[in-house]
Length: 334
Image (cartoon, rainbow, N blue to C red; front, top):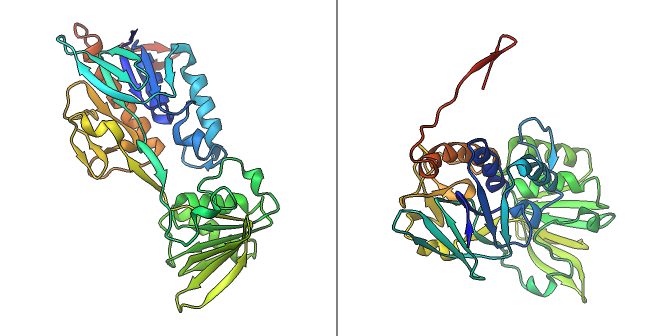
């Protein structure tokens, strides 16, 4: 049995940053993730995707952020169980928890933190005839390696941040990029939308608004995408790749059976410390919900810091969390 102070379910960016915040308070962490590597969605779905809202980085690629987080937590020597899914949580007489995985790994901890992102997720697929027939043959739901699309004709569908960001990025990679959106406005960040409009105005991408992809054509591999405009007229676009980016459909899996308060596939938490209704279990990152919730990595980092301050009382019940200040060259420091 593995013994630790905090068991973190989910080794994405928020889970990894939790190790740093816990380490500052002398708490040990063990992380469990169903994926075979750390990084969560950043590493599994879009490792080369540029991220623009990390403080101190005007832009940073997703995998680079994961690598930096791993370097940041290395001094605290976290341990990992990867490629296994948490199945059960059992409370012990002293209030501590035993977490069991699909491969019967057991972790004894004082606190469990659910940082599972969207849980078990899968891409939302548009209702297009023959869509599945072209999966892996021109239809892709994520961009792992942008070089795969170099000098190709690429059609992207969607109106959120992923669709906007990849349109901007692939404009410098692909031969031709077309972004198709059913509305005339975007759900993503205004700055990203502005960049897309500028690219369209300068002829660097094709932008089709109030339109939908309604069909796919090809013989063994995708050759054409059929687009329907608002007036029902259709157009055939030459396309080597079609990337529908309509978000992810969250599936909580076994988490749904742990007695937690759940609303719309997300775990309800107390914003004082991001604790759940079950004592010693916290939820941080995209998997939690509360009024005013913003699904940003930055938000998850804040939640991780607050959570660790609260978890301290379970790990060190006889100690009070306090900081002593000293003055170094006239500047206050810890």
